[in-house]
Length: 490
Ligand code: G6P
Image 1 (cartoon, rainbow, N blue to C red):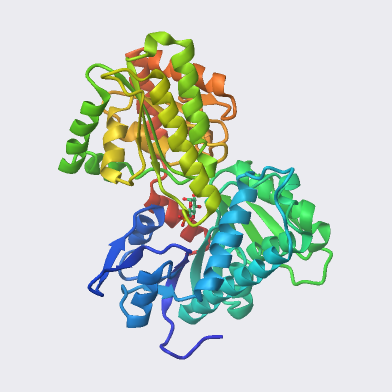
Image 2: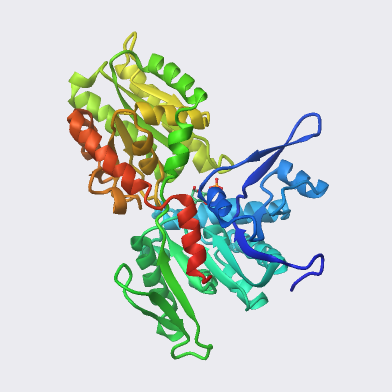
């Protein structure tokens, strides 16, 4: 229901778990705000100040909650202060430990997943958290406004919002992969159905590649069956693809479009940012750590279980084993930034990354040469410095919706960089021709690809890098965002 605190006027609304700004509570009791980056932030800036917009997001920590309590906040941002226990069940319990695991196929299936009473309890929180978003959006949206709901955290929002405000035009965008139907069906049937029906409450469902969009379409057909509707059109082909609801059922006919918007890197921003003084400083420091005249293999990731950092290190180790000519002539610069440290399995994985890196250094290192330089402290300027210096970029996720690092490195590379890219990253659809494509589980294959990258002739490397940069910046965030908005009608 629309609450009467103010006349709702927003014409464009974005909803995502993590918002564009966060607050830290300092010791003296003051609040420090920090603006985030990412595709949505620069995308939303493209709509112009004459269009009223609201971004609904969750208060993520104590600082955010305090900001909500004090009424501190940015215009156009509405942070929801959801009960911390409910938030934790929804975010850590369901979104990150179940939905993320399913879409990235991360379960070790002899023991996991376990959908027990505890999961059902957490699921109720996920519903409550989605409902809080739907209600806030319903209260903020002007007549026939366009609403862009983001990701697996908010899969139920489109359906809930549609019943609160049938006048709205609703899109949902998945930034993750979508699992094959047989894997997706691991979810209890009622939950799988609820998720799909929730998303199908939207007028338009966006994915990063046709591979994920098709998998979604197959999940709908396999889990919901023909009674609820049917797909029209062929994913990836010419023309519109949509789900026609209620073909043989009772429900009023309605259509949900399936669309693909492959997010690209922000070329203009990156080229400018990568030449600022702090990046130059970091380059000097990195050059010192790497040592004169050595090649560099770079990886930059959040330490997600899906990023496959450990196998990347093992591939590098195998390279040093099988190609001793590279010893003392190459350094693996690995940036593994903290992520989701509230989850034990993420903490353990982070430790494993550190352990394997240390082991390689102790086995192969010699005075004056450290084979792996691992940094875990997030530093964007240093990431850009590494991008510029890289001879080879290693992007080997076991599964990834897109992977922007693969698209960013070629844009800022100083002298050309070979890209070793997993065939399981969404980015392979656009970059596959000029990358060295690997099976991310294959350690020896990945080691061979690293060797091929290091050995690639300079001219070829430069040519490929140029083409990769063009392909990787084809849909910059602003265009990506506007594309989704246009998809909902003018
Ligand atoms: C990755 C995914 C996004 C997701 C985000 C959430 O970046 O590609 O789809 O929204 O993780 O991360 P968080 O740190 O907020 O859990």
